Length: 487
Image (cartoon, rainbow, N blue to C red; front, side, top):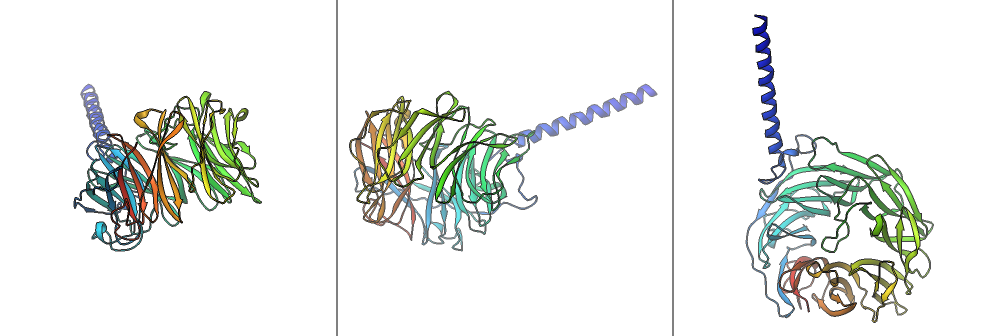
């Protein structure tokens, strides 16, 4: 009898374990289904029980327009009666997905929203510029885009509200938000790798990095406080430290995070700005280096586990500087100083076996210019600039054509007769090979450019123009997409 009871108990335990294993298996399978084949089950709305914001959908296809400009293969506007802004474009899943911000209630947004507060939207287009659908996230409050990442069959989107930041996971297949989460403070930037999202948040009394585990059931989310007093501090950059890194579409920052990070802040005090570099781990943040009288513009990885820091001097008649830093020590033998003064911004772009350094400055005639110097890995000039680029150019994006870093497309926002425009430059063989001015006769501001097939790029911009290269405008400001053929 005792043996029989013992056997029964063993059978019950085995049965319970089988149920647990089956349930766990089902949970893990469901946790990896996002829009049919990813990870919707891993997320629950935050706070518990609160539903994600609703979405409204428009599926009224519209073909792209042809252009009188022989360098524009097609163009397309998205907009309504008020301000609509271009924020991000992705070439994924065989389509273009554009993320924007709209206040409009008419034209493309007729019936999708009934108030003038800015909301986020996702639009889908084919590779010929045909608009297929628009989905508006109706949160009920004003939201301003910060960053987005393609992920599985959808996108992870970070935006700011009045006093908080919001994180969405949007599923393309279901055309809805499947997860949302709020943070106190304002998000300045965010970075994503396979299982971790880092959101840099500025609050009234502190600066922190919120880490969210994306596909992990064993690691909890955590927050690292950088500073408890965030006054007079400005975000400058954030990169992985001592890890592999890559450039995506000409934007520094889409790298792989592996537990160590560099956060760069600019601190203004008594009309001087110092650059503060923090080394951040999962345990703490340590101020590792201070560069006095420098306003950092850009940070990017360098050889031997170091990094390059580009910025402008915080002095009268500032010059541009680029430093190589290894083991948190400035390498004085590996540095670059511009010959120009009144420098407003410095940019560094990978080129062949070194870099090009783009210096933006104000000339003696109060006109804004930029020049391009080719430098080797030790930052010494190998091919100096010949002619300055006029019209207040500001580098917006760069693309290595067909992943060839000896053939670059550089896109700039410029100012002509008080209005903003778009300048496309092809840089190859250590020189500017061609330039194209694209846009209308009002304000056109480039957001992003992507490599496209057929000797072309696809650009995304915000525009108030209604003439020249831009065929129409629905309201105050539209999104404008165009396929540009480069020379």
